[in-house]
Structure formats: C-alpha cells, structure tokens
Length: 305
Ligand SMILES: Nc1ncnc2c1ncn2[C@@H]1O[C@H](COP(=O)(O)OP(=O)(O)OP(=O)(O)O)[C@@H](O)[C@H]1O
Image (cartoon, rainbow, N blue to C red):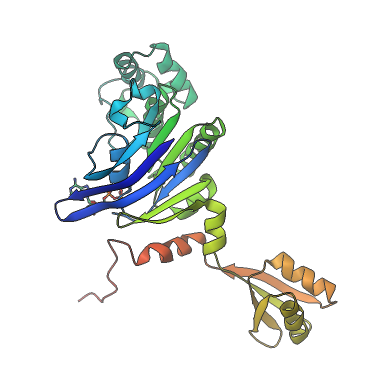
C-alpha cells in the first residue's frame, strides 16, 4: 500500500507537485500517468524518500520510506538513474546490493534467473544492452522480494519484446498480491497493463479511476452503419434511446452504442446491414485531450521563419 496525502513539492517559485492525494492498493497494477513535466518522477522520489516534500506526506506500508527497517525487503524501485557500477558484473552488482541489505548472496542468482539474465550473470554492466540493463534494474528491485514495487518509466526505449516482458512481469506481481505503481506517459500501454490509473498534470490530480471507467468515459466511439432503410433504422435506434445522424443516403453515424448493438437492432427490425464500421478517438487521443490544457510543454503551432 502506498498513500500520498496533500503532497506538495516546490522548487523555488516552481510547484512541481501540488497538493496531490491518492492511494495505491495491493493486488493491482496502478498506472501513474501524465505528460512531460507533470510531476510524476518528483512524486515517486518523495515516495521513495529521495526527496523531501515541501508539505504533505507519502507513506509506504504505513510509514515514510525512511522509517522502514530493511527497505529493500518492503519496497523495490526502478528509477532511470541506473546506479550499477559499470565495471562490475551483473551478478556482483546484485551480490553487493544483497550483502549491504543483509540478504543471502544466493538471491542474486535467483533474481537473475527470474528476469531472464542468468546467461549474462558474468557480463560487465557497461556491456549490457538497454534491455538487459533494464532487466538488471528490475532484478535489483526484486532482490528483497518486496511487497511494493515502484517503477519509473520502465518501458522507455525498450523493443516490443521488452515492453511485453515488463507488462507480464507487472501483471504477475500484482496477481501475487503485490502493490505495483508504474509511471508512464503512454496511455495505450497503460490501458493494456494497468488496472487502475492515477492521472496528473502540472502536479495536480486529474483522474483517479479504474482503467475500465477511464476508457468508458474518454473513448467516444461512433458506429457508421450502412443500411437498406436508414430512416426506419433511425427510428428503431431512437426507440431504444440511441442517437444517430444521417451521413449520406444509406449511412447513419450512431453514437453511444457498439457495432454489435447496432447490428442486433437492425436484425430485430428486419433491416439489411450493408456495412458496419467503428470509428472514433483512441484512448491516446482522449488522454491527450484531457491533459493538453494542463501540459507544461507544448509544441508551438506557429510557422518557422
Ligand atoms: N530539482 C529540480 N529543480 C527544479 N525544478 C525541478 C526539479 N525537479 C523537477 N523539477 C521541475 O518539476 C516539474 C515536474 O518534473 P518531473 O520530472 O517530476 O515531471 P515528470 O512528470 O516526471 O516528467 P517527465 O515525464 O518529463 O519525466 C518540471 O517542471 C521540472 O522541470
């Protein structure tokens, strides 16, 4: 469990995190989403005791991170800072980390196996690819078998295989009752990975909701139906509380219903369906709409001189 209460962080005149409150529950993957500069990394650093809040508080397993005894056994974190000595082997990096936290040396090989790096245990950190380095970072986070995992942009720069691996790992950890908080600015990736979303922009909370509720609220699908009797179809839809508009002689644009629902209405009314297509904004577009006015950095639309 992670609890963030009225968390605020100011850097001089700049408010990076602004009175933020949310709870991250166990047994779920919670996506922490927001555009660049939204305050995600600053929030995660405060959760992990790497930065002091200006006001408010963040607790992990009920206490501030710094008050945790043997924190590696309670919270595992993957931040983009790396932190592995480039001249060390992957295994030695993990063994040093294990020793400094009172964990058995054998854990190093166990987590290397778990992240698929057993074959690269003797490779030096500097020689690892981006994807392998990320796996090593995840191995370090899993070393103490913690109940809480915090991952800052874990899929950035990874190839599709790496993205899928991280996704499946997070889902498996949540299924085993772990608390998983993962930051990202990729809405579509989070839609297939997360159960719950916390959306921020300019340091403020915009949404704290399940992925299903977010998708239902923000994806506006329109069904284009080409039918033998468009006026009869409009009436039939209206009787069922579904709105539609004529596009051309044979086509209706139907909102607030799925293609399957529209097809069933036509079938019930003996209207022949000549074509059915779903169109609409992707979740990524909905997310961009939601955060656009709050985004800190926006591309100029002005011309180039
Ligand atoms: N040490 C610092 N000193 C001054 N300003 C900072 C500092 N750290 C972050 N900020 C500012 O706070 C804001 C939030 O930054 P943060 O890195 O937390 O956002 P983010 O959501 O993680 O963004 P990104 O997706 O780009 O990593 C930004 O405007 C950033 O410039």
